[in-house]
Length: 290
Image (cartoon, rainbow, N blue to C red):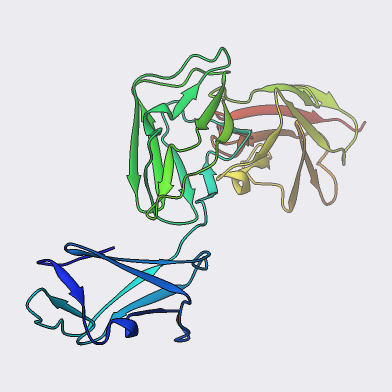
């Protein structure tokens, strides 16, 4: 619909009014209806998703009631019938996270705005109880959800964006989206070490196996894990292999008979899957081969 400054009528070039696709191909048939100050253009069928169309009203196609002719007018519009989709969510679906008060950031395939069901966006605990208050901020392609206070350790939460809660700039509504995350703020702990702390062993080249309370991964200080002799000299090279809940340390060659060695795992050398870092751990063993 095109609205004018005053009542209009068809001019001599009325039949030349057109809507064209990016290749200049005319939309046909194009129906033109004047009603007072408005001109309405309609077509049979649909405009094609993703294309930009140009409306052209040539000079003389429209006049006012006394015959003053419109100068050429053009306008463009793009057709977008594609619903926005979620391209990423942080924390990712089914992720175990360590941040008790972290923001949830959801990224979409295009710029978004609040839809009619925006207020129904929620984060719920395992009992279906909604986190309140939940603050929702849109910025371009992202929706950020934050809360007062902390998420509870050990609980699984569900993020729900209901149909119509988010639209793109053209008004296409998101279909219902859900994602889950679990909160884990518990640091991994050592449950056993072999050889045991202060153990005297008679195998000079044995592997050291450290078992933790949960599955582990290398932390930022992983390279600082060490085994040292009584003078503080590190065993080199020291090979470190993680498998599930275990860390295995092996060396080239043998430990020296009669010496006491110290195993040191510095703070941050090991984390759990959620990123909770171990605090410094040490253990000793002595080699006796006679």
